[in-house]
Length: 118
Picture (cartoon, rainbow, N blue to C red):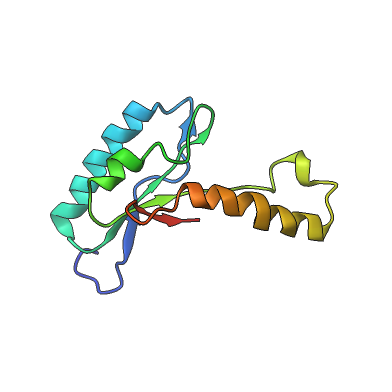
């Protein structure tokens, strides 16, 4: 796929789970994966998915991603799997997105940081 003009990005793994996957193990995996992609493509984005679960942080991959060109942090925000949203109206769900999720996105968005996919 490296020579295909349609190759835009490679996501190395989707939704690794914390604590089953340690940050150290994930970092080592992402370093090796990034290097493997770069051996075949200098232009494809390399997407690194944040861990789901606890303990994890939406910015825990920033030190790794900031030192590598063409990296993207993939963040996942789920309302679907939390009972907190079951009794909210449609408008309350929308308000939550604008108020709380917008603030969370500001955490993973910085002028000098990696790109983010949501």
